[in-house]
Length: 139
Image 1 (cartoon, rainbow, N blue to C red):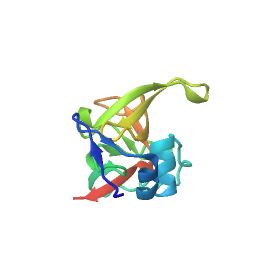
Image 2: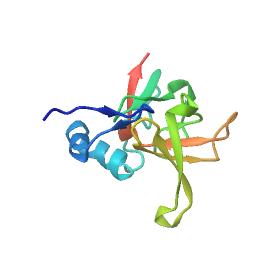
Image 3: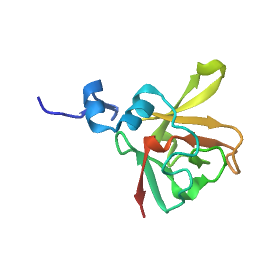
Image 4: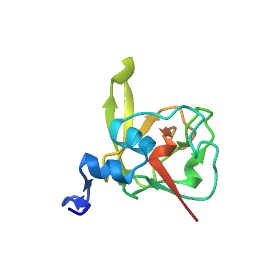
């Protein structure tokens, strides 16, 4: 049996859990598929400000641009806006005794992180994203 990416009519990627496990590192799998969070200040992109586009580590969907990245001091890469509104999805998250807004990749449904209303202008948003969920495509 070959590993075939299945794309639904809406353009979303669906794979079996065994396919995801084969394609992702253990940390990427834990974050993207199991909604884990990497430890603060340990991610590859926390303090990186190289120019480029941050894409989903699971499916390659463009998610964030380096021009929208800022140092929030939160311990994870922070962005003020997604590359396109259609590239992400948001869901209410009531885990861990908190009410938050979870950010997901709109193409593969991978967990990226959370968005908070305490970012810089003009959006006022802080997309707090796990490095393990991202890959930087340099400009």
